[in-house]
Length: 251
Picture (cartoon, rainbow, N blue to C red):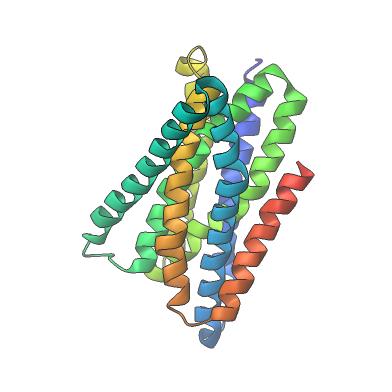
């Protein structure tokens, strides 16, 4: 019975990603669609960059150098980040070969889904472990994760919907990303509880940071600027950063 509440908290936090997909149900005037897409893409990259810079990279880096000292820890951290960069480029090339849905917008949606799945997986582990040991700490962590999972859902749903015109596909891919969090919690309980450490999670999150930063700069920013709506791009980035900073402050 003790695992029910930790699993429930992880599931709610993860599935909150789907809430971000609800934007696809808003009626947008045809002449404003480009501005809306540019804003959503920019908002998403602001969220991803800010999470990486203010959370994933510094926390993971300091955990690693605390264990391995400055030089070794720094080298290991850089390797993890570069691996994330390399994997993103590799996946990007594979997806680009898809002839049926080869648009850049669709590719961005799929890359965002994969990046956020990897991001949500260790989050699910962390939320479950925290809740298992201290339910009040788990609830606090779950709320913080839920608040930044909602805008992450936008990064998946908007590109996929506007490239395929399918609400079902947009929600499906957002749901898949969200489910990785409770899956991470279940795996943590069944198999990994004895082996998971702060260092292991730090490696994974630095790898994820490499993916998210690469995706944001090489794909999201490039695509957002292609709509020639510079003011919406700037507004989206600023709002994305502000949302994550507020989330950090409140948590």
